[in-house]
Image (cartoon, rainbow, N blue to C red):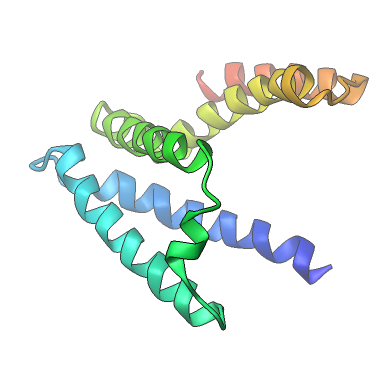
Length: 141
């Protein structure tokens, strides 16, 4: 059970801190310049954790197993980060920006799951889409 709950708890706590940090990026710095520091720190922390958590750590051996996904992930992560920073600079409240994107994302991922991974679209998911849409209407009033 802990192996199931702990990763989601880490995502939730990290996302809370992420939103606070994104909202706190100074207006006086270009978001992309700020992200160069963000990714430098991220690369260093990732390397430290990789070597700390793996007995026979060998990055070059690991890199031989790469496919296209980490490269595209690097590009889209920049889009996520800079998108939130610009949204906050444009005046989006921290209490709604993430909820609005999450609701749209949840709906979109139902269709992505169906089209790419052959996941079923159930009545519960259709009801979830309706609830997301109602939530978007309510939160933006």
